[in-house]
Image: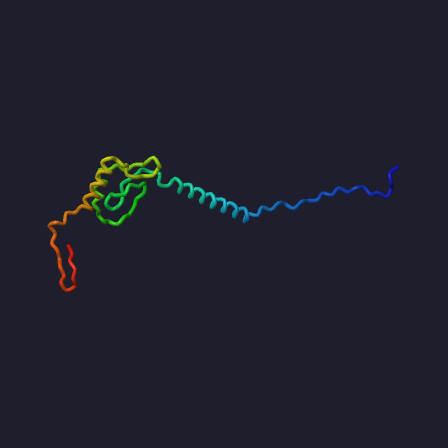
Length: 135
């Protein structure tokens, strides 16, 4: 026998509220993702930066680099040695002058000439008042 006081179960259909997409938060996440991705790409480019062709640069053509370099325009005797030198990427991956016998000899010759200036025919300046002389 079934109990008589029981009421039949009503079927309840609870409707769930529709899922709202919060577009603000989604947009913020997307923008942040793009920013982080952009910064990552920029930093990776920095790692590869300077991996182009080596070039002769500087005011007097005395610099070997893979980027344009601005220097002061002070001519020094060593600059002449680099006119025939080879600017290329070295084994360490950096652009530099290839240290050939000719380049090294030229640089040594310039250094020797600078340290051995013949002053035998120079005039001497004497200042009697202050007691010094300069040759």
